[in-house]
Amino acid sequence: MHAVRLHAFGPAENLTYEEVADPEPGPGQVLIEVAAAGVHLVDTALRQGLQLGPTPAPTELPTVPGREVAGRVTALGADVAPEWLGRRVVAHLGMVPGGYAELAVTGTERLHTLPDDVTPEQAVAVVGTGRTAMGILQFAEGLGPRDTVLVLAAAGGIGSLLVQYAHRAGAHVIGAAGGPAKTAAVRELGAHEAVDYRAADWASRVSRKPTHVFEGVGGDVARAAVDLLAPGGSHLSYGYASTGFDPSGLAVLDEAEQAARGVTSQVVLGEPMFAKIGGMGNLRVLEERAMARLADGTFRPLVHRFPLAHASRAHRALEERATTGKVVLTP
Image (cartoon, rainbow, N blue to C red; front, side, top):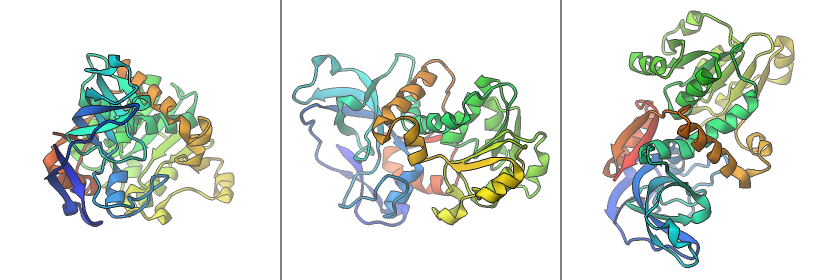
């Protein structure tokens, strides 16, 4: 089979498209003929040898990156029910890499069967990124028509799903994204307003004070968004993508400032999110919620496709914020 391998930590160009031996499913595992593989911002950090969140950097090279795959089951390991053979499935591989490939193996406990009307690209765009979105939304229970939601990076993988969820809930949705193409995409997703946060005065163009700010970008843009919060509002931070993985770019307010302004501000990824579902071992709960939102039409994921052989280009585009929606590799 062909796969993308990383032989040395460093820039995107270190990802190489190679021919490697086919993997074989072990006991309790299946072999998936991969039709779509997800690319996550975490992947770009791991490629550099960095640890981001709970995902450890690879300890052995070469490695095949990627942890989200969708396709058809073509072989079964020992002790696997024969009914799995031929099924269209999606899986998050967990802490085990191997997704950027024509074939991948994983345990049956990680599989989700795909409805006939769901494409592999849509599924792989939701199984990991969607579970994160659902985890974030646990901190905004009761979201509804009385709310105004401001989503930063609203044309990205997570942001686009949050826009759609908030729109379906009846909230007034304001999406902030970079450039006219992305703001147009945000309007198509259902946002009532879309602003270009590359403009110096973007915050003044927001018509209402938000009750919720969802942001994973950090830095000055995030701080400007937090400054827009209405009294009693909530700032939910899930990253600092604009700061080159520098955690000092988090825009979370300290306790004194929260008290003075009458708002809440918190990081929701990691332990806070896991605590809501009874621990990291229960992440499948969020996957199931995300897949349900895909099935009922709440999530209509934007997909930015690259051929598997161009994984390095996909990484570079993601790092340069030149993509819209979820980045997906197709063999």
